[in-house]
Image (cartoon, rainbow, N blue to C red; front, top):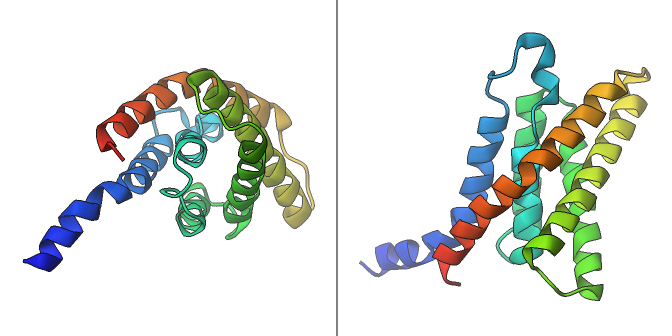
Length: 167
């Protein structure tokens, strides 16, 4: 009985990871036409950045690696591309948080902008380096703009869950 109580009392620590995985699956669902499927918003990445900004202890390095690996598998990227990108994003945001320790909604949105920019730059660089060919950068720009447009909704959804956790 003690083990069950321990598991149930700590299940709220896994909410950020489960929410990130859920939004990652939602972002790769085929709701865009076939030719436009590579411009879907990066819902999982926005969620990872939100939890890194607001509760970095709940979105640990291992959780970031797991989400990055999931993104690589689901998007068909080379294994390790998203993992490395998310690790660089987490490191960058943690270093920025040491200087500016404010996690209001506006600052969270700014951190999401920075994190999305870093993630897309690293992914584009690694894909160009690995494949030795260029691809359509307009798709990447549109994906960034679409992700930025959707990010306030995702931030408020995550804020709701953050307020419900009471940690």
